[in-house]
Amino acid sequence: MANSISTVLVAVMWALASPPSLCFAGKVGSGGGYLYPQFYDRSCPNALNIVRSVVAKAVAREPRMAASLLRLHFHDCFVKGCDASILLDSSGSIASEKRAIPNKNSIRGFEVIDEIKHALEKECPSSVSCADILALAARDSTVLAGGPSWEVPVGRRDSTGASISGANNNIPAPTNTFQTILTKFKLKGLDMVDLVALSGSHTIGNARCTVFRQRLYNQTGNGLPDATLEKSYANQLRMRCPRTGGDQNLFFLDQISPFAFDNSYFKNLLSNKGLLSSDQVLVTSNRQSAELVKKFAESNAAFFEQFGKSMVRMGNISPLTRSSGEIRKHCRKINSSN
Image (cartoon, rainbow, N blue to C red):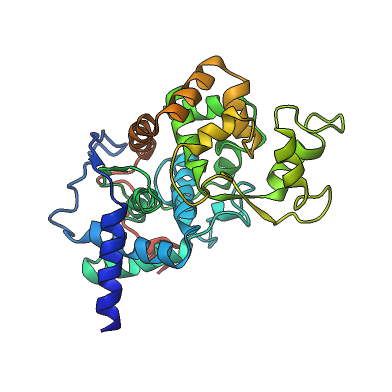
């Protein structure tokens, strides 16, 4: 009886969270195959429902998990493509990307991915890739937080290696300049519009004190706070983020509606209340990006539409398809190590 009630609650939760789905096409992958939403219709017809159910339960247990699962997909795609390399533990010749500076003591949600993979292996063994699980979980997390839905092109395969240097160098950092961040996006085939829209994922989630402390006390090395940070907000942040200590204290990226996926993130930027320097520079460093921030701040619908499009574009970064890579049986290790 308890399981039946839980299933009903998850179904209701998803139905209430789901806005109309946006439809965007997939594209050719590196192995010559295509990514498309119907990829598992025959091989594992219940795959999307299984992913959705596990994610819904995880977010119900801990709302913060929505942002964590979304972030996993970002940090995977920006290294060497959307290939689930971020999920690999260190073993043999593999140095895990989990140890990279942008990921260490930061990325989380691996146990949820493990739970999804376990359920899928019971339903349809060796059929659904860990890379596709990340892409689907990111979409489902967005929806459960109140954000847009979109059709996720699937058919990715999993890498048999990781790149800790790629994780250290390719993932945009909170202290990067605007031009550095834009360059990292362009190197992945993404543009200015994608940069601003995808930055909107910071409408949910948290950041540690150590990530933005320099903005409060010594932004440019002159012992002064960041002039672009609104003073009362800066004073509020200093209460729990002192000059020393409190490194792991968590702060909402969006203090207005921290668990709701909406456009308040962009409204914060226009008020100089972006938590991270990499957020605020979208307004202060480039006229085109500032205009996009204003557009999304004025229209939640415009933000949602572009976010779905940009997520599909990001999910198409160098996917492995057809005979490239493998379908891992366990997301944390390659098949040859099983």
